[in-house]
Structures are given as structure tokens and as C-alpha cells.
Image 1 (cartoon, helix red, strand yellow):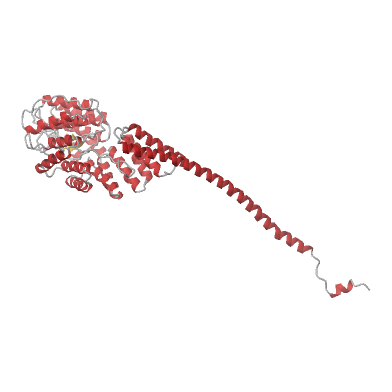
Image 2: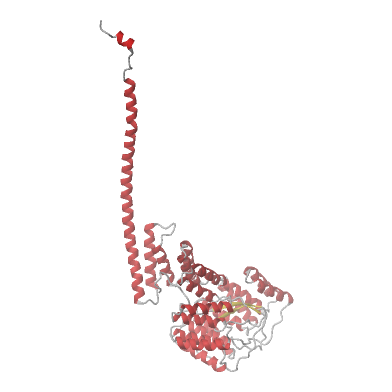
Length: 503
């Protein structure tokens, strides 16, 4: 917890965040995968149009692709790609990091290809229109796996996970070797916090396709999400034994070391990945997290900026830049970065939490409350939301909130944080307990202030009454004087005096 009164949230981008639910248990080993039977080819599928969304709780992304050769996936991530053609049954797949996934492309009907190409073109600016075009392509050619796949990606971005799963499975039914759909299906399960389901999906696919390193990298990420770091390390090293230049495996291995607090080892592996592919944005994102762990915020900012220069479509890079800008009190820059993250990934709960912090620092308290509430709706188990909402009410009286109720609301949120926080240091716990005490004291001060104000109102009312009476009395006195003057005898002249003289 920072000394400032907010909690910022950032997840090591390569991994699947620690707050992902683990239905399969803690450090238990993952199921054994078959040995890697062939080394990956080095050719990447063509025609991909990437519009990724990287989930903080799934480290995955969705990409639109224009053919059934799955689009390139960012190394070490659980990809969710959109594509436009179907790979043949004998297609090859070699994993992430500059490798080909399929040898040939499916040739769809002309109307289907036209609709899908147009859908990819408009997807970032008009996803609803893109969805209609992808659905049209799937109707025009039901065997066009990429059309079903792209429908799934749009649905997933819209948070319609049931529809997304059905679309991915349709793509797999059309082409069982459409590996991007398999990876996205697994990633979707992780986003729904079911790592066991994701693991089963990937293990089944790997048994049928033991040479596909992309599937293996996704499985490694899932094991990291499930805190099976020993299994993840073993699998990453197995991939590297087959392909020592595999960026995805290097990033996953760095994540394992990072999780264990072995920051020097993580840095060494990431530097190796940077040497192999200096243009891979994900490497710089993960280096940024290592710098953060070392409290080197200057280099962390530079690393995240470099990542956004290489690729401006990675939400977690913008999210963490926003968090760092908030720490340095550059709230306008923070808000801009976080809005970019949310434009790319509208259900990015951690970005909403950090946006709330930026708004709070910028004294936009209502906007901060709305951002925190949105984060809470997207991630009900994220205890940091309780903390930040509690502090927001503790420090500020928001419009429409009763001045007494404010303190009760603050206390309630802070106590919920203490009850729900999964890992809190003794010092942090003590600090939050002090905030709870501060809320109690604030309530008592407010009650006394209200009582004092009521007494003052009574005194003021009594004084006003007396002043009004005095004013009325003073106003009446001149009127009485004027009446007396009217009764005063008139002056008499000489003739009158003579008339009254006694003879």
C-alpha cells in the first residue's frame, strides 16, 4: 500500500493475475504434457489485423485476423484472435514469437471473404457493424472457421462470454486445428476464473498436437494463473529446449521468476528476450513491472512508454503508465492513459480502479466514485475497491451524501477491505484500522458540530426575535411623539392675548 491514500493495481502482464480464481488448487503440479516432437517453423501467418485486448486477469488478448491462418499472438499471452480463413487439416502450428501456425489458407466463398475483410476493417471503430459482417460471412460460408472465430472475439469483447464460447467452438468444429480458437477458448475460461477448464481444453489440444508451441505457451500461462509455478517453469523450459529463441516461453519463464521474487533472474531472461526481438512490446511491459518491484519508477515509466511506442494497442501498458502518472501527481496524463486502456479493453477492472485514483487526485470526486463502482461491478472480489471507496468518503463529502452518513459509509468500506483483503501486511492493517478510527472520530465530530449548529440556530432565532421586537418598539416611538405634538396648543398672537386679558 502506498503512503498516499489509494491503492493502484497493476498485474505482471505476461502472467495471469494473482487474483484469478484457482479452482484447481495452489502449488499443485499441472498435468504432464507430451514431449515436443518437432521444432517450430519460423514463418508467421499473413494478413492479420491486430486489435488486442489484454485482460489483467487473463493476460490474454483478442485479435482480428483476415484469414484462417491464425493471427500472430503476442508472446506469452493467452491470445484471443480474430481471423479470416481456415487452416487445412494438415496445417502445422509452431507457437508464438514469430512462428507459423498453419501452412495453407482456406479459400472461402467470395461474399464471405468480402464481408469478413470489411468486418476486420471497421472492427475497432464500429464493433457492432463488424459483428454483423462476421455473422454474414459465417452464414454465406458455414465452413469458414475464421468467420465464426471473429464473431467469438467481438462477443468476448462485449462481455457476452456464452455467445463467444459457442462461436469459438463452432470454429473448432469446422477446423479442429484452428489453434487460435482453442487458445481463445482457454483464455475465455480464465477470464471467467475457471483455470481448471482452461487447462483441460489446452491439454486435450496438446495431446493431439504436441508440436504446437503456442498451445503450450498458453498452458504455461494458465498454470501461472493457477499458481502452479513449478509446472509452469518446467513447461517453459521444455519449450525452450525445443526452441531456445521462443519469446513466449522466455516471457513465461520470466513471470515465474518474478512471482517468486527472483527479480534478477527475471531481468536476465527478459533481456535475453529483448536481444532476440527488440521490437516485442511485451518484453518492455514486463521489464516495467520488474523495475516497479525494484521501486525504480523512472525506468518503469520509460519501459512502459517504449511498449506503447512499439504497440499502442496494449491496454496493460497504458494502465500502468496511468498508475505511475498518478503517483507523480500528473493526473491529466494519468486520466488520458487510463482512458486509452479502457478504450482498448472496456471491461478492464484494474484500469477503472486506477482511473478512480487519478480522478480523485484531480479532485473530480463524482467521476472517481463512478470509476470505483465500475471496477467493483467488474471485479467484485477485488478488495482494493473497498479501500479506495472508503478513503474517498473519508476525505471528501460527495454531493448527495448525508454529512453524517459519509463517515458511516467510509467506515463500512474500510472494514470490508480489512475483512476481504487476501494479503495485507501488519503495517497496512494498522494504517487502515487507524482510518476506521478516524471515521469514528469524524462521525462524533460531525454529530457535535451538528448539535452546536442547532444550538446556534436556536440562539440566532431568539436573537432575531428580540431584534425584531426592539425594531418594532423603536419604530413605534416616533409615531407616539408625533401624536403628542398634534395635541399641543397653538401659539397665540397679540389679539388673542388681549381677548384673554382680565380687565
